[in-house]
Length: 104
Length: 274
Image 1 (spheres, one colour):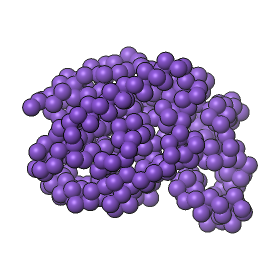
Image 2 (cartoon, each protein chain N blue to C red):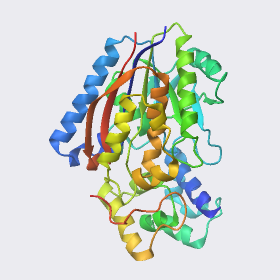
Image 3 (cartoon, each protein chain N blue to C red):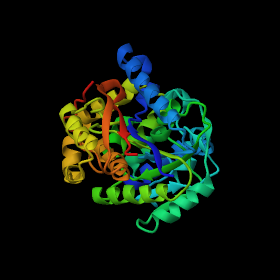
C-alpha cells in the first residue's frame, strides 16, 4: 500500500501544477495526506531519485518527478544506477532491472 | 466510409526531448520518416484521426485503471509534461465528441470500454501528433490501452478490440485514419533505458507486416517482460492496428534502434485493401 501511496503522490504532482507549487512551498503539508513510510518520506523530500526507483516507483512516473526536481536525463539514469549499487535490486513493483548497468 | 489510412509509430519522449543528444543522422532520418508518414496521412484526406496509444499515468492510475478507454472530448490539451523537457509546446488538439460517441457505442457492442470527456495527452500521443498533425487541425479521437500498470488486457483482447474498432469505423460516414503508437522492445525510464533487442523487434515487425494473428498472439507477458522489457507491453497498440486492418499487409517504412531515444524507432504503414 505504501508504494501505491508514493506513486499516487508523484502521479498527482506530475499532473497538478497547483499541487506542485504547494509541495515545493512546503513538502510536509502535502506529504501528510499520504500514508508513507519514513524511508519513502525521506526519499521524496531529499529527493533520492535512485532510492525511489529501488523502492519500486514506476519510471514513467519517476522520470517526471526527477525532471521536476532539476535532474537532467543522464543524471536521472545515473541516480538509478548508483542506487542499485548502493541498495541492491528493486524491491517491489513492476521493475526488476536486467543487469543494473543500463545500455548507454 | 471506412479506414483511409492506418499505421504505427513510436512515441518515446526522447524523440523530441533529447534530439540534442542524438546522432544527427539518427534524428534527421527518423524525423524525415515521420514526415513521410504525415504526407501519406494527409493524402488520404481523413476527417478524423484515431490514435491508439499507451499513455503513461497522465490520466489513468491504479486507483481506477481501464483496460481500454476512448476519448469523447471537444478538445484535448497536451503535452502534460514540461514542454521544455519534451521539446513540444503545450497546445490543444480538436476532438469530435459526436463521432467519438458513435464509435464508442459500436465498440461497446463487442468490447467493454471506458470513455473520457477529459483527457490530457502525454508524450504517448503528443509526440506522434507533433509530427503527423503539426497544425493541430485534424479531429483526434484518442484511445488508451493500459500497457503500463498490470494486470493488463490479454493480447487476444487487444485483437478483439481492434476488430471492434474496425467495425465501428466501417459504420460511420467519415473518412477515418488510425494509428497505433508504442514501443517494441525497450526498457524506458529505467537504468536500462537505451537497451533495444533488435532481433526481437524485427521478428515482431515481420509478424506485424504479415498481419500474422497467430504469431502475434502467441506472446505472453512473462516472455515479453523478460525478453523485451516492460516497454514491450505496448505491442498491444500494434496488435490492435493489425486487427483493425486484418487482411491487409503492411510495410516497415523505417526502423532503426536509437538508444538515446530509448526505443527501436519505427514507422509502419498498412497497405489498406481497397
